[in-house]
Length: 259
Image (cartoon, rainbow, N blue to C red; front, side, top):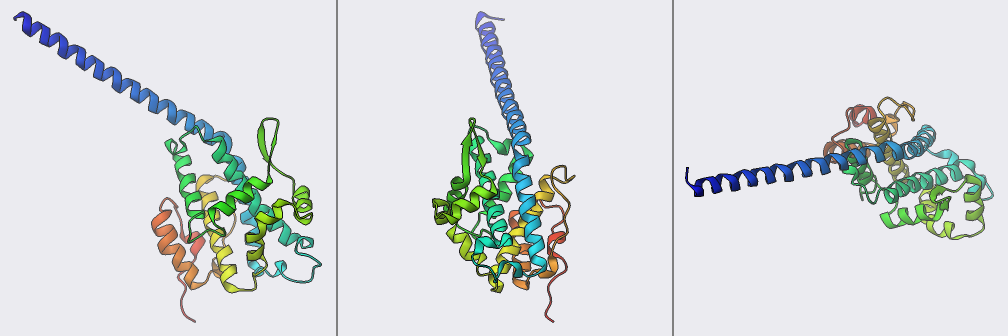
């Protein structure tokens, strides 16, 4: 071999080694990011699931009576514990989602399978076809009940929540869009909106906590869904956006037919 051949072989060998080193560093970086995302999700998702489970249970209980406990016979809405409780549980769930997002700003949760699934569900819950209020209103409600304590964020207690609402605090201003919804549950369209939101929430809980380690396995209220809500969930929500749901029929029930 000539000196040129030897030089070429050395250069080629060094180039291959460099490529392997770059590939290894990229693999190691991706692995560490994935490990960090998995650790973050494992440590911070449970509070969100617990808040979601509490809200889903309340919606399920109210669905059995067509949300009649939210209506009538009280001096004010907040004297009705069903009303104030549901209002607080909605705000609490949104606050837990917001806290999760803020704590995970430096983490790519989509590097983890559960994190990616959670992101898909929150995107669906905040989409125009499912959400109860617009995204900015939801974020404002979450921020209004989050308090910073000992370097961390936590949700204010229920008693403080009611007190601030009745005192005309800013909390009441931001909660007004939700209050307008909950005071109109005599309308079928409003009830169906809440039922659809609860069905997606129920599916999220079962998907992210299939063994119900921090949540409970609850029955669905499929008989309360209208034909329009059933079709929207079947063909848009579970058919397009949440294809990872293993058993969508659990939240749908049989097809809705004309009487």
